Image (cartoon, rainbow, N blue to C red; front, side):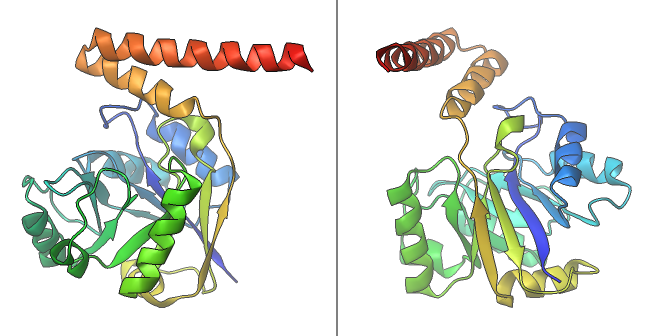
Length: 239
């Protein structure tokens, strides 16, 4: 029977999210998720917080994080300790030294792609719910070109994004990290996606503005949301 993996989520441990571990777990259970991969910005604390509440449902919550590097974001899976470096080569080495896997998220958004970076990557996020169709198509092409398995990432920063991308693996549900690592690298899979509101990125940027005390960012995103709602209202009135 296939197992379901929900990948690339941000809790309130990230600078641009206020999602609680409890809210993530509740939604994961509604979606019948077998594997949950929380990837907060620059910290594994969010995944550990979720692990402390899971009680075996979902069966597996991977310790993971999304680290900012000099060549763009890098996700580490199966981590045992925090990574402090911002050098891409050092981050990749430290992930592998811990027995972890390296995922390249949204490769065509804010990345410097070169042979050195790609050589250290174990998986590529071929679908990111916050990326455009063209960015995701290019990511899928890249994964095929460099012969890497793919994952679909919800990149969820708010509750409505939690079901936006689901990985369904044609394999038995893993009983532990060793089996999961093998499935991530080798098992056939499909990515099931759902559209979410385009306002979600602006909302998370407003959260970031509040957390980082950046009023200019807050006002720019508030304006972005207002203009979007106004355009939608005009369209509805024209119908």
